[in-house]
Image 1 (spheres, rainbow, N blue to C red):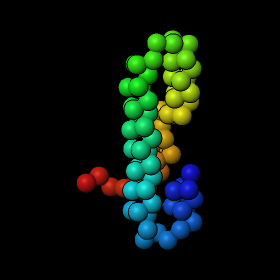
Image 2: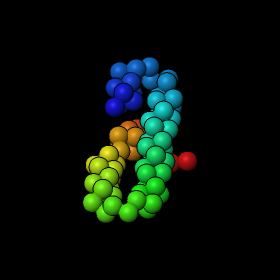
Image 3: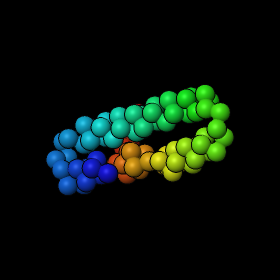
Length: 78
């Protein structure tokens, strides 16, 4: 992910923007996947639905790069 590269090699003063960008990308992916899941309910072909669900699951890891990036910052709790 570009955010990881920028966090590691970029200006440390831009870290907040890097994390924000990563979290926005993660939110967009989650929102798009929700839209797909909602629309799958309208498809009668169970084989097709299963194929799309499998593809969707492959795109949505349990832990994202954004989660890992935030965790690696070792920020003190607010």
